[in-house]
Length: 213
Image 1 (cartoon, rainbow, N blue to C red):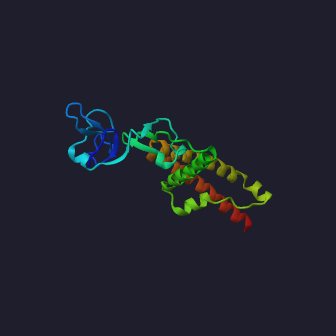
Image 2: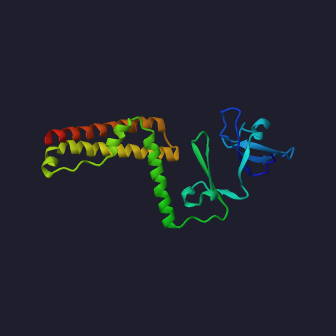
Image 3: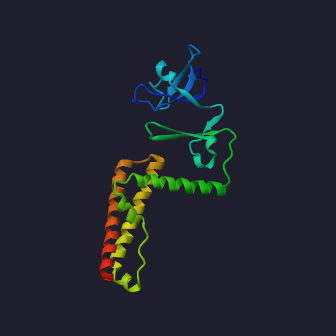
């Protein structure tokens, strides 16, 4: 395949060392021949002939412009490319030249959907058994005023555990979205908070059953 200057390509690296699997096609100043420069950095990351032979074009910089602070959700999918670089530690966003941002109402809807999808993916990382997740996700049972009074301490436990778990889950979603943090460590931490909430919910069900005979 023939590549042109400014092509951004995906390819199969021959090694994982200092390679993202994305490269910009440039023209050699001494030979006028195209070559690929991996996006990992500018030093010692030129593609070999075998590597560039596996590449295919994603887009060309003549058609797109890099916008580091652009909101990728603000554009139609065909108008934006996001490359995870430096082993996922950085993100480069490219927007088609002349592309217009979506209307506010459509943008808000897309943000909500993206948020829900990210939360579902974060929950899927938890180590908890399915029955634990089902109990934690269910609504609190309906209770009489007398039952609420008797079980006040357990309900406060649930409230504290819920706040802790939601905060941990929020942190995990943020890490999964931005790559800024240790997702594996945060998953374990979130799972511990999830287990504490499950214990509180199980205690409520047990005490409520005892009250009702």
